[in-house]
Amino acid sequence: MATRWGIIGTSNISHDFAVAMDTLPREEHLITAVASKDKVRSREFAEQFDIPNAYDSYSLMANDTEVDVVYVGTLNEHHYSVSRLMLEHGKNVLCEEPFCQNSNQVQQLVELARSKNLFLMEAMWMFFTPAFTILGDQIKKGTIGEPLQIISSFGTPMSESLIQQRNSGGSILELAVFSVYMSQFLFGPEKPQIYGTCGQLTECGFDKDASIILKYSNGRISTFLSHFKVNLPNEATVFGTKGNIKLYDPFWSATKISINGTDIHIEVPKTKKATRYGNSVQLIHEIQEVRDCLLKGENESSTVPWSLSIENAILVEDIRKKLGVTICE
Image 1 (cartoon, helix red, strand yellow):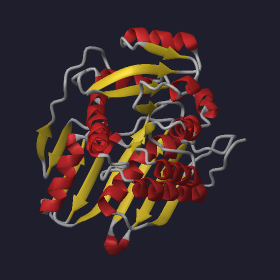
Image 2 (cartoon, one colour; image 1 turned 180 degrees about the horizontal axis):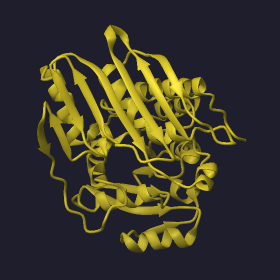
Image 3 (tube, helix red, strand yellow; image 1 turned 60 degrees about the vertical axis):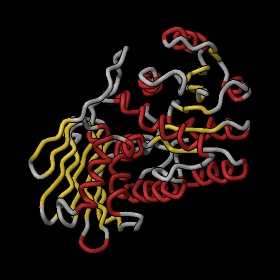
């Protein structure tokens, strides 16, 4: 029997989520409803992906008995409220990263999912990609010796007016979250010392850019940059005592990885429609993870467990505070 999905939000990432799912067997995954606050956009999205139900209210989705699990692809500031509404109505939830705008909200969602015996996962799809699987395997094998340094970046230019409008958290929450998770993936669960922070803030107190150094035990360091004003390499390199592994742009969904100078190219499924983000057809791997967990009766993923999302939310929160980020009311 197919897992019946509801998509909340008609954003670019929601579009790519639907495009990716269209490459999977319909007897396993089926989108039965889409919801947004704009009825026209919901209908257009539904027509584009042959979805039977289009709602202009999140509450209608919450009460749809033909939906097993919802994917929350709204703006970041709505992740918490929408996910909470779905959980309160008995829906399993896959919520796009970053989970919430602060650690308290993440903890509240986790406690609600636990109390209702529901599945909940932050959509950190990077962890499920083939490139990250290769990265983890090669480090475990000792191919590059002891990993001691990570250098990563994510920068994409946008107009100053658009930057000033972005009240979803700034470059750390929107971009550097991938670097934070990668740091913890390789060097965690230890909480690092936030050794250095530098960046510029908007009038509302959000970061336009950030340069961060995280210091772990035994000489391990993660250095990363995020930026709304310039293009950065958007690559990640892990340096060890016997070599290095490089994930090419975009490192969170890389289809090219270099291990001690030897390149590996990763094939991805062909899509019927073009995706709006690079290589985002790889969302299929987290989609399948959700179905596998539901079939096993598991409420959290072992790859992105609740504890990891809470720990990383606290770390991101601490980094933002160190940088001087404030919340604009």
